[in-house]
Length: 327
Ligand code: TYM
Image (tube, rainbow, N blue to C red; front, side):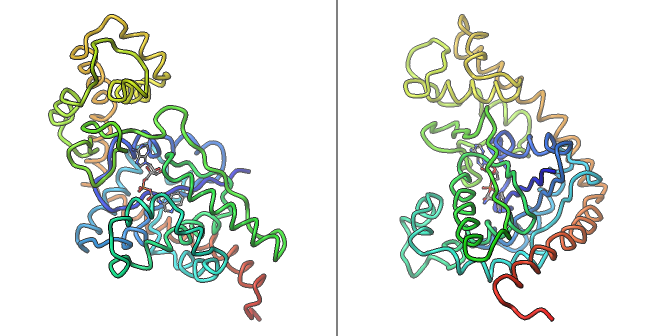
């Protein structure tokens, strides 16, 4: 049976990129196997963050998970920090990753290339080690993520091969599951950049007011020319909007382009906004209800208990394999 695991870091308000690249798909795995979806709050500490903001973001993600259709009876939903085995496995596995590999990680380079070494925390550098531990702790073979996280999953695979070569068949080899449509949603203000939680201008936030979402889409940067066509190189802005439309309607951006061959940019954008709002408004309403009811609190509590039970099994195996005394 498949074991599926993924997580989202509560560093900022979630974006349409997080939704299309990851969140929206988690529920699709619920009938394929055992699903573990968590809030990566320890990862959120790798860059400075206000404690209250972190707590509020964590609550929000729990509610977003439930609003996206994750069913706590089928999916274990939990906070990373409430399962100490993540940190314990990390303490062991970090010894099987090397400085050279970590220095090559794109996310690390993007976040830290302009920072002075004396300002870069150890946690952000060692980030992929904790992320590998998150995955390997649950014997996950499938890891649904957006494109920007694939490199980290690949590193987790290298770690598994290295570890198993030395100690036997202990860890499960994970594979990134990347969505066909929307694995990399770009910024609306600069389609050469990824849409990210830290870019208020080019982002659509899942909590944005519908009127704001419409306005952001209507003023998204488009390209020269006037024809709606899918051409990532020459029409990155329009292609990004076609991808967003396609993700909402479950069709490829090429198919989406065919629907708008005779449309002007303005009319096309209106349709993109309609498609996004058709999906996000009911999602926001579900989120609001869940947040107000407080039901997510018991979900997290029960989820952490289940996660700890599963995680302690593989942790014990690893501890034994490397030679820690367990009698
Ligand atoms: P995070 O919180 O940055 O992003 C959560 C998920 O959203 C995807 N994503 C995108 N997809 C498409 N277009 C975009 N513009 C976009 N921006 C973000 C990400 O690829 C991700 O799937 N390191 C992870 C959290 C994590 C994790 C894990 C994930 C920690 N441990 C173990 C899987 C397994 C992160 O920072 O995601």
